[in-house]
Amino acid sequence: MVTAMATYNDLLPATATEPKGAGFKWTPGILPGCGVLVIEQRRAVATYTVAELPTRWEGRAFQLSKIDGGTDNDETGYSVFICRAGQDHLCGCKGFSRWHSCKHVAALVAAMENRWL
Ligand SMILES: [Zn+2]
Image 1 (spheres, rainbow, N blue to C red):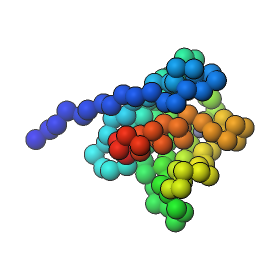
Image 2 (tube, rainbow, N blue to C red; image 1 turned 180 degrees about the vertical axis):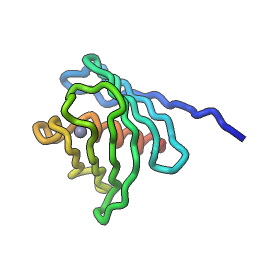
Image 3 (cartoon, protein in one colour; image 1 turned 180 degrees about the horizontal axis):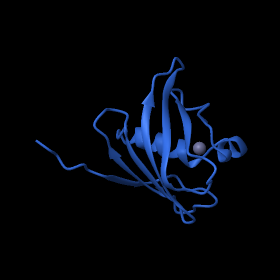
Image 4 (tube, protein in one colour; image 1 turned 30 degrees about the horizontal axis):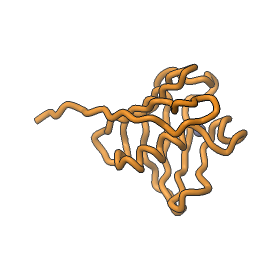
């Protein structure tokens, strides 16, 4: 039996550049922790495949591979770590290294809070 893939929609928390909160969509894959993530900012829409990776750290690790769009054409993907304690998240993107927060972390945290992941 083939089941149609549901896609879930929500908004990320508001930021200075996204006062209404960027939109994001999650389409679960076949395996837990895998799926397709779309982040819809005012400036750009980016689509990633998400795969959960094993980690020895206290939290969950994901590899985001960019399929389409985004604001940084040099990057093809990011490794993201979501800390269980809700702090010390990590992402390999330029935004995170500059601001210590980014849309990738925000989207994965929100997806986990929604129990999509
Ligand atoms: Zn990031």
